Length: 429
Image (cartoon, rainbow, N blue to C red; front, side, top):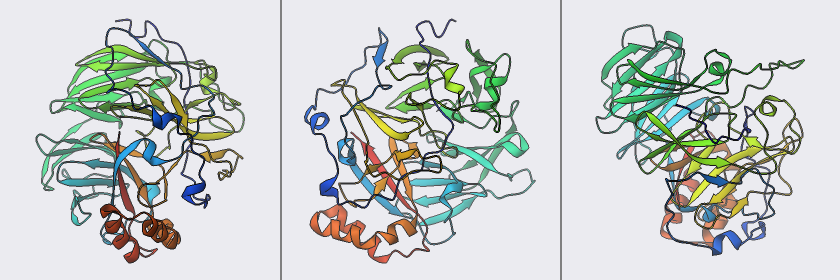
């Protein structure tokens, strides 16, 4: 199957983008363009008979930093003090079910109820048949209440029931960690950094829930002769190609190309092409320096945070050599807007970090969604960041009272800088 029949070639990335915390302006003074907010439009219905062009690799002066522009509802969940999970950079995944929250760290998997109360640790570290060395990715089979996790150190998948009971384990044929549960019986593996140098290069792989290979599709564009630049490894791009879902539809985009595919069983149908005057071609994608051109970005430890999608919006994490930001595409109105902060903090290379929204609904906090599950975007906010802004948040709540903010007020008043992080669960419009 010639999968990329209409593909145009483009960009993305490997560099990490952390949310900025240096912007202390009051919410009233944030730059806001109401143009994107005024156009509500009808509920978006995708035309599956044609390929839709989305011009995200474009410059725009339509700025909107407010979380309310994209979110209809947010919830803050304070995690129990124990076990201690302070180092948020070590967090691998956040997965939601109807009743539980699951977090995987470098050294454990933990479950909580929907209020943040700790329930149990799932599995344990070790070399035993029911143990793992390090689980890098977890995904849920919600119908059967099963948690799947890849233990790359032992080249195998471990599976536990939601109650912590060990269910099974099976070997992995390849050194793979980035997967989704397409349904209760099908696992989909997505292309990762190491795949892009293999010949042939895996595009996407289907397997059963016991690890038996069903079908592999091979890339039409990789491997490329990746240039190793002096003084570094070269840029191999974001950790894994984005694979996400909206409602019951899964979408997949191979890193370095412009085409987004709709996954229909074991077939991929080209659905969208990313365009724009600032796009890179496939070879340029692997250049260390790209100037003002744009590519997809994704923090190294959060391998599913480059593209978020809802009924109305697609949200892309982009960067150039000078800035990183979120670009928001309204699927109904076809408009774009982006996050922009004139006084954004700079990283060590001088690039300004604008890849965050500001919560103008409940807290006034900067928000950098790094995870997604069940159609929700999820941000993890360290307790010490909230503690440092405690009076600012309480002042905002006092000026903007509602039932939800009163619950948040209790969390803020009780928080210390040594507490576990707060989860922010965002329902997109």
